[in-house]
Length: 453
Ligand SMILES: Nc1ncnc2c1ncn2[C@@H]1O[C@H](COP(=O)(O)OP(=O)(O)OP(=O)(O)O)[C@@H](O)[C@H]1O
Ligand SMILES: [Mg+2]
Image (tube, rainbow, N blue to C red):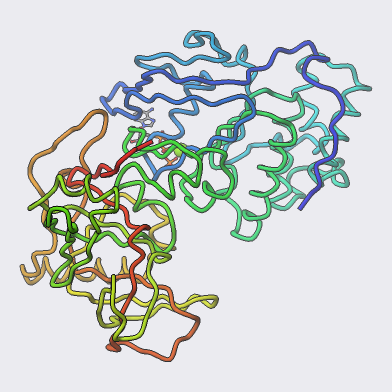
């Protein structure tokens, strides 16, 4: 991890104005072929803020970034830079630095010349230019390779050079489009910390694009989660993780995935709200303020979300809020083991989770795909139940009624255990449920809540 030292000089000395805030107002991008890449997005990036745009491949993240940079024109809506309408401002007049996934460097130039290039274009004199390049390079830990060509660098070093070239003019706004996706996971983690440290040290506003939820949660001041061009939720990592606005966001964030169980609601006035999950039930006491919101769904099905941290294995005779089941299979992750329990319930599976699903949910996904293939072959199973109506509420497409985007299947409740526990498949387990940590969603995929932020 590098220590970011003071980088001499500021943009003002170079006679440059810099952009520090961004506001997107109802910004839509429809490509000529009719693709709606971005759908009425509203988003503010504050001065000095590190905003992460998160979502699966194709959800419109790069298009948003390119509209901020001026590389793409919005079809409608307004892009404001420092409060001024910038829709017609050419990219070179936006004073924004951008780092792309492939961070193309000039191969024939040395590292030093690559970093100095934007300063040369800006007409900065050789002496202050050299000083600034040296400062930036040492801040990025590449001070000793200034004389090398890009081909003589490692991937991580090349990425640092690209960063150096972007920050050397001290932009007010930094746009980064999956800048780490070409690197191996160790280097990613290291550079992740460096990038967020560096941008904070410089006080530069940043929009950082990634499809990696772990990266988003570790780096961001605030995260904006997109799905199919639509903004689903914006908030601090604690807010979007702790109180996800939609079922989609709940399913996207966290590892292991949040358990999403179908429950039917039954109200016993003044006593409790029963959440019937398969043959079992959990009871939300009437004194719990959330019971009033959930009570509106009396006689209906909702989705109850429970993260692994809300679930604790307990002894078989433990009373209270307990779900019982049998272990279907175990996954060992070294520092912990995950048990997947058959509790006789139905799970809601939200699709379009992107590639991260493969890494965080490998076993389940494989099994699910196998199940789907078997179902197609045998015509049995009935887990995939697409609801026909495509309801749109506000700016959000319904998750549950979005055809083909969700399905139901037998639940495999993910529960954390100590590493390599002395249990195996078929073993019965009782799981205590922290009722205050439950999430509730309606059939449209919207959060059911009181005092919703
Ligand atoms: N020039 C274009 N013409 C038509 N459709 C486009 C064009 N550029 C992008 N799209 C489409 O717009 C949607 C959003 O694309 P975008 O590149 O913004 O996604 P993304 O979230 O950055 O994805 P990824 O994570 O794969 O980079 C996609 O469906 C894409 O196919
Ligand atoms: Mg992209």
